[in-house]
Length: 223
Image (cartoon, rainbow, N blue to C red; front, side):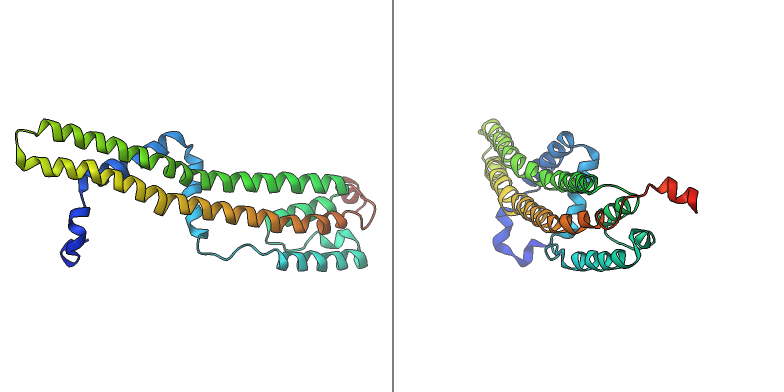
């Protein structure tokens, strides 16, 4: 970025301070986070601009599947095309003869696993928000060391003082204006999605009550 167009920003930009805070924060997050969770944290950025999850369309699809199963039996759902993996797994379990309690347990497990994946994403950014101010303090100490070692050379005192002050500024800004808001937004979206998905549990469990369960192995043998 050409700071000549923004003369007021010139004193606030320092490559060394940026490297200490930005590089230190990235290094700390990478060292404390499994690689898979790092990927989830980065991929989670794609959902920041999306609308909150709405289970209405899935609830309507489940209701339609329920009407079909009442007319033609659960076997009629065996070839249904269901995009949502949780709903698809629950429907397939009902078709395969799982009891209502087993379908409910399956959904509870899948919803908990989904929340864990979302948690891994927002914790990456929460970790960055936690580390960034500490990196700013480290940069301040680096700047103060440079300042004290440059006391005999007034020409270098200004640069050392800039590093000491700007690293604190960068750390606070990165934590409170970038990382923490991202973590909070991802957390809200994950909790909202989980709340919406719980609306699907009872209708999916009801599918397993439509007809007596018949194991898949018996159906294939009879066929």
